[in-house]
Image 1 (tube, rainbow, N blue to C red):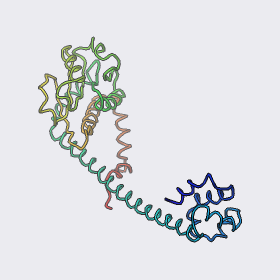
Image 2 (image 1 turned 90 degrees about the vertical axis):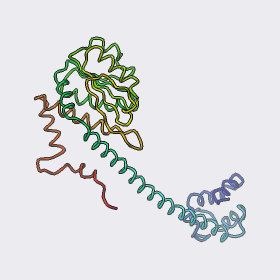
Image 3 (image 1 turned 180 degrees about the vertical axis):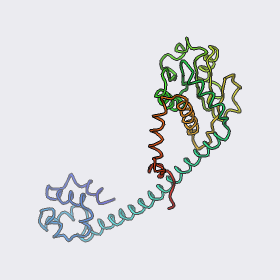
Length: 294
């Protein structure tokens, strides 16, 4: 039984003066472990005799026995604290290494994706978006988050950008009047060609829309061939489903659209100036992305 547990057990039976001693020891074990009985009495505001009575009432033969018990617990706590700090330091190092493993895998996903992408496809998609009457981004769950970012940036450059996800804006009816002048971009990862995105792309295709399907390369081999105008595969290999390569594809697509729209060049130039100042040095926050030797 620890000192605090023993004090808690006998506390209801202690007199008011003894409770003051118990409260002090419970709150200041580091001090009580090394101060004399008279120093403890002075700190609490009771007599030396009260300390002697307190020691007996909680089951110790002498103040020295009580102090040794408190001291043992303090030393054990300090030792455990040191072990905890060491464990946390190791955990932080492992966590940092794991984070860099994820980042490096994302880099590899991006390299793998763009090594396989035909940029003529990306340029044709950009041309279609610029000329389109309406542009719709279609996805569910995690793909919808990527689409939301892409549609927001696209909406800064041209009007009539729509973001479709299940239960949002009555999606099926929203395509009722769409046709040949419209573009629909859909995302489905690990869907094997089924689900909301491909259903919407099928509907858009039946209405004559220009359709683009972004799908992950790992499950694509198990996915039925779809008659869409463009199919772009992105790498997702990771301990978790990573859509970093998809975001990179959208970044490139937004750039290709922007350079085709004259009124977008000012905002593009401003963004590039923030990332790469005129002095030629990358912005400080970009430099922080590289790991440092420990």
